[in-house]
Length: 312
Image 1 (cartoon, rainbow, N blue to C red):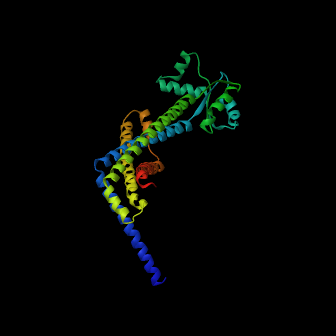
Image 2: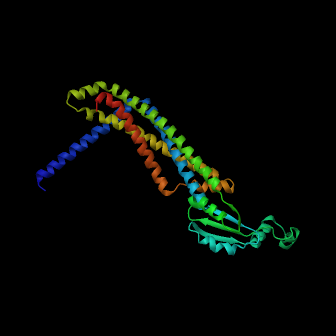
């Protein structure tokens, strides 16, 4: 590399640093001129992203809860009186949608029931009821939760099976709740996004008007419109990024508070507390989504504001 080339690189680097310094200085100056309007824009973005972050996180948790229920879904098959679980178990295991089958004889079920009821003697309880009133049972686990309803219908048609039970209705209710929650979140997020863009656009326009005389001087000395108004665009992006950072902290705080409160409750609520634990991937993904969304809202608001003046 010649000295001439090195000199050109040095000059290019100096120009780049000078432009970067100009953009940073003008952006900070514009933010100072914004005054309380800056906080109006930031607070609007914060409310938007906080509600969006909470709804997104809640949607993830509902999906996780749904998947957790789905992974535990199994069909309880109660056989007819006199039919042994060992007889039907090989037949059911050959079904394509079956992952595993566990059999429980009526003697084992009766012994467990007597133990749970706290009765002192299995023999006495059997005599009082004139024998064991239970039937053999099979726990059939499907390969996926989506196949459970079809598997249950197939099992009902087999001879020797009296009753088939599963908790598909509960899973369907959770899925419906998740879909409804997502629709509400989309509508609220859309409305607040429009509001945030309008507030940012108004704020940037006021800042531009406050610096109109400086802008005219810069135009007279030959500065391009794009270069003049770029700091105002960066101010809008700054509003979005700062609002996203504040909203992210608030979402994290709410999540921690709810998880801590649930961890001190009953066993079922503790199960919910475990289900609301964020995965490591989600912990990283949520701030990225909030920052990207916030920066995009700020960018759109500032572009709407300067378009009228700069005619970009």
